[in-house]
Image 1 (tube, one colour):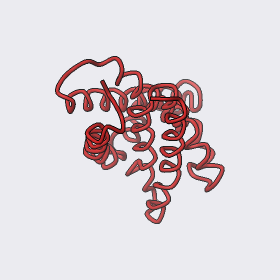
Image 2 (cartoon, rainbow, N blue to C red):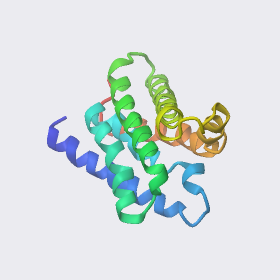
Image 3 (cartoon, rainbow, N blue to C red):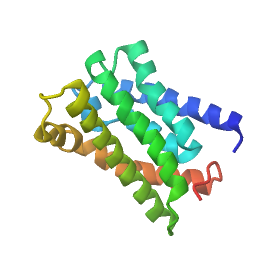
Amino acid sequence: MSSTRRLVLTALFVALGVALPQVFHAVPNAGSIFLPMHIPVLLAGFSVGPLFGLCAGILTPLLSHLMFGMPPAPVLTSMLFELALYGLMSGLLTKAIRIRPLIAKIYCVLILSMLCGRIGYGLLNALVLRAGQYSLQTWLSAAFVTALPGIIIQLIVIPILVTALVRAKLINVD
C-alpha cells in the first residue's frame, strides 16, 4: 500500500474516530461505556500498519478534544496513550502474528492490542498521572467493568469490518 493511500485511510479513520463519539454523547458517560473512539483507531492499525495506526491513536483524541472538548482534559493524556498503543499494537501484531484462519488472527491481534492499551492506560495512571491514588480495583473497574459493553461491541464489530475490508481487497492483513 502506498504512503499516500495509508495517509488518506489514516485521515478517514481519524475523522471517524472524532465523529462517531458525537453520536453517543447524548447518553451520560457513553464514551467510557461504549468506547466509540477505540473502534476506528483499532481498525487503523489493522489497515495502515503500526506507524500510521500510532498517528491515528494520537490524533483522534487530540482533535476530538480540541474540536468538541471530549475527552475532557483530565482524561486526555491517558486516552492519548491508550489509543496510541491500540493503533501501534494492532499494526505491529497484524504483521507479526502468522496464524490461520483469518478470523483467529483478527481475534488474537484484537484481544492482545486491547489488553496492551488497557495495561498501558493503567500503568500511566498508576505511575504518573495519579500516582498513589490509582488502585488495581480502580483500573479493573474502569478498564473492564464499566467498559464491558464497549469491549463486547469491539469484539463483534471489528472482526466483521476487518474481514469485509480484506474480502473487498481494500486492506491486506497477511
